Image 1 (cartoon, rainbow, N blue to C red):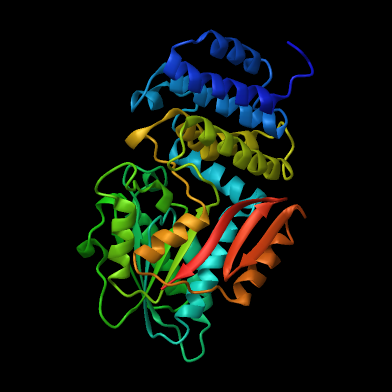
Image 2: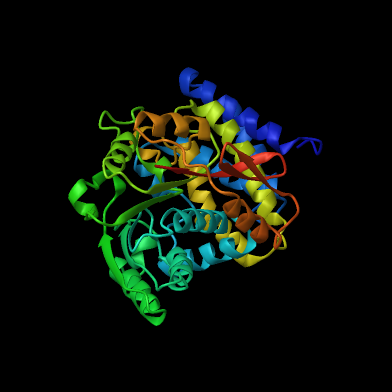
Length: 381
């Protein structure tokens, strides 16, 4: 192996060979490049070496099989609930992507419902519900007393987040927290995929200010390129029909939805190189918690993007420009985020590397690493 080889170039060469092999059935070059990559990647190495290990895994999974069988062949097995939660907590601490989502949407929602006596929040990826503890605490301090808060938490019963005891435990935890702050509170769990959500599942009531949160999940909804049912647009139109006070959208700033294999591979390599570099800035290379966090919270997404096609590929990111068009077609208008939202995020970023960047454009926030935008927050009504 030539010690002067550039890992990124070899990864791209291998992906290009895979793309050609799938149409020409010439696997010799692919196998040769995979052998080279095997000696260049490492889950304990530099950011590009760690990312390369999971991208190589994605290539292998793509070549081994297709469809649902791929998931059974992955080396990064499904984590247990405790493993997943531990890994998510590590990522929450060492990089600001979750805090960016929680804080920006919380501040935007609190401002939008400032004078409302009754508030209904629909969260389409409730997970453990931790985000709403911050909002409940903030609303408990409202002059004249706290509002009545009702939360509808949507989460697929098959999802990793929902496995640790179910949504009723999330509701119980939030109810106890709200009670401790004297906040009138109700919780409704909708244990289903967003694709199955219908009007009656959300229990929207007259007289309540409705806030809807889409945190890093709408890209997993199949659109017109996957299904004639186009659940992505269907769900947006359903939410618009309720005339919400505010809708917050958090998404990765990446373009992998309709791209063919090689451009998608290249985009994934660019996006996750920046993410792995940002994670690397916070923990040593041999840190076991960091390795587990990357494996359980990031690797499966990477493998899915690279290995899967059709309905089996659930990670289908779109850049903000496409989301803007999609929401406009559903009847939404932009609700520019206030300077308070940006200030709250800048305060959080003081705890992290100076290589994180926060940019604002037409009331939309972009969080990035160096020159690469990674996440966006926008609000709509």
